[in-house]
Length: 117
Image 1: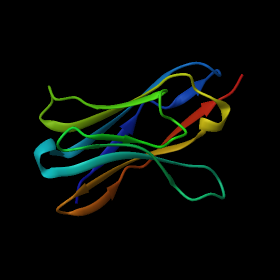
Image 2: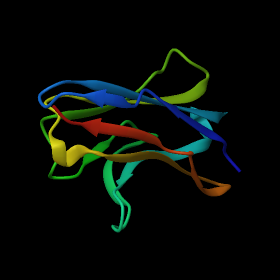
Image 3: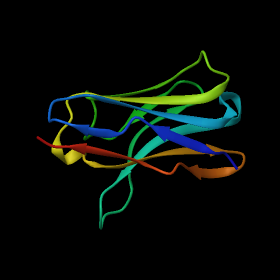
Image 4: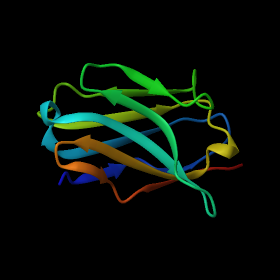
């Protein structure tokens, strides 16, 4: 099992920025892909962005051009960031980090992002 710890959520005004971070308990060489998902009450968890071991990135259409997922290669343990710019009220959700590895799927505890004036 991979332990994941998210940080960086909070309250921001529309148009503002936030940066989320996810630290994994395993090195980046043992994780196939790390992704961010988000969930609002009454809705299913939805994919936001992901980064593969080979550096390939993918984004949901709703966040393309505004969000950037990246990996901190200076750290031995896998640390992935989600830079969120141009935030909109509809981006309000609990954001979860996910890791896919030989140990299966792992989830973080989630961090709240609220976009409101």
